[in-house]
Length: 426
Image (cartoon, rainbow, N blue to C red):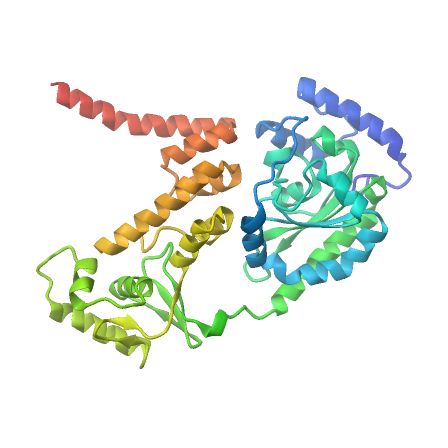
């Protein structure tokens, strides 16, 4: 075979290849070895699937539903190129009794469109919007494997790890952010054995490149009515985007802006003093000087006094996360959470906001039991020592690596406790 990413070489008998692949799949699920004619990309994927604890008789779970799916899908970057996907692939999918599918970087299906009969059949295996088709959830499949290996890939019939998916053939290609290069998701064509052809792989790859080109041409979306935007999650010095200017704020000015954005009704000088300073010896003069410097930095008309308040609404990224949590859009909230609110701030009111936001999100993630969202939190700087999250992750993704990290973390956290008990006993 000239291209290992293509499922069938020219002249191969699809029916005979299916029979051979089924025997190879049975051998792997029973003995753990991968015989020929399994391609290396598929063999590696089978091994990753097994290590992730995926069973060959499992099926996808639907994680995003109703409002959660709607909010997440509307705000996903690939929503901006869905018209292009439909224009380039919609007729091909409908006429060929195929499906056009688009997933995010975690393998969650955001859109599944195409031939009505094919949609009904695919629905029986939960190949539907909102379902998680990551390799770690259902094993080898084109959209999940494409985002896992960051390559266009074709998966033919019994190359799928899950037996329920083996009647299907699919080809998918990852789509990247043209500015950062990160994987945004993948575009996929799913249907019958006829898709096991080099043309289908080249087709989805060309569509993915077209989408990246269009994303590069699209100007960044502006907030409603040019509302100023405050970015304070995961950074010690916040940034304000206002009137086309990007203003980097000092730590104290960051704290003030976070609190005033939180209280559009305004705060008195005494309320701001209590919210900002643990040291009761700080005088109102000190605060007034900080506010005067902030007013000059922001420009005329944005910061008013008596009480201190912002004269226009300011959209804070912390407020976005909290609003999504309150509406039950957990995945969308996790996507918007870039880290703790002003992590180095010791201002009492900011510390309370920071804890409330982080605790609310991690509690929602633990309750949701989504392994990808839990893994994202656990492997982030703020979650690497979060014992409750690692325990929740181990329950839904019981891999050797997760259990090893959990055991190490439990051991690390147990040592100080044991020493404290020993000191108390003496």
